[in-house]
Length: 188
Image (cartoon, rainbow, N blue to C red; front, top):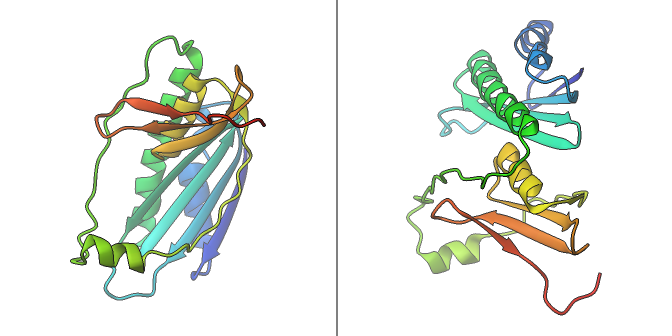
C-alpha cells in the first residue's frame, strides 16, 4: 500500500509522520484491495473553531474510493478517530465485496441544520461556489453505485449506468431509502 501524507497549514513532522504510518499503515490487514492511501493533515487558524485539527483519509481500493474525515482539538486525537472510522468503512467494504449485492442497501441518514441564524433567503444569497471537483464517471450497476456512495460518505453519487450507458445519479432520501435520477430525452 502506498501511503501519501501531506500537510495543509501544518508542518508534517517526523513524529506526526511516524504516528500516521503506525495508525494507518496497517489498514491493508482489513483489505488486500488497497492500492493507495492519501492522508491530509490540516489546521484551521480560526480561534472560534473548537476542533481545528483535521485529518482526511482517502483510500483507493480496486475501483472504489473510501473516504473519512475527523476533527479534534489535537492532531493525534484526530488521527486516532479517523483511523477507527476508516477501519470500520474498510470492513464494511470487504463485507459488501464478498456478498453479491442481491439485497437492498439501506442506511440511516443524519440531517443537520445549519444553525447560522440567517433566514433561508439570506442563506441562499450568501451561498457561493467555493469548490470545483472533477470526477471520473465509471460504468457500474445501480447497486455498486449505492455502495460506492456509502463508502464515500456522500448522499449522492454520479455514475454511468451499465445497462443504459447514460449518466445517472443515485441519492439517499431523507427516509433512508435510495432514489435514482435518470436523464430524459437526452442522448449521450
